[in-house]
Amino acid sequence: MGGEYLDKKRKRTAVLEAAADAVEPESVEPEAVAQQPQATIHMACPAPAEHAHLPVLPEHQRNVSTRWTEEEEGLLVRLVQDEEYRVEVLGTRKVDWELIGRHLGRLNSHRTAARNKYWALDAGTMGEPQPAAGRTRNRSFSFAAMAISALQQMPDREGTFPEICKIIEVNPAFQSHLDWSTSPGTLHRSRWHNALSSASSASHRFFYNTGTKRNRFIVWRLIDTETALDYARKKETKQSVPYLGQNHR
Image (cartoon, rainbow, N blue to C red; front, side):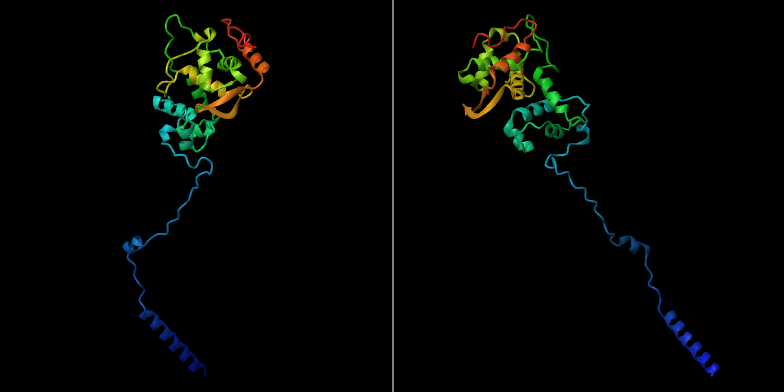
């Protein structure tokens, strides 16, 4: 009985071994393994939602320590002064210094590189030729004070930028302080026009946009005459510029 069981077990084992020997393993060439397509994993790096529409500048243009070129200065001035161009390029009507700095590759840690550069260009403190003989410039003079004085003389104390400029131009107290050299990045606009525009835009406590236009220019109005004149008085220069507006009450 036991012998028969062992014989059957040996026969079954022999059959299984013979079947295993009959099946040859499939050989795989190394070249075939190399040619098999590999699964590719794409690590998507989503662009930040903020400013995602702006172009990414080359690495060499993203260094705030490099010297500004004339082309960059011109583009900076245009982005600040040309609202339609700013909307087209940056998608905003607001003068956003972070957006402008990012677009120009000049975004420093304090987000002030583009703003400081524009203010320097407006004031003529960088790359400006020396004044002609007999001509002096006083950088401490307030262009906001000039605008206050001009608005004081206008009906309803309001006017457009060109109207303000015309009054300033004929004021003897101001003429020696007007820099008529061309501002970088512009064809005909003088530095003092740019400085006045920048000062007026920053002086919201003295001027406000009436929401109307005259000859395609925004009409600005003086807010508080006494406050504005007090500001102008404090900003008088050491050259004894007359008290602005004192004869125009």
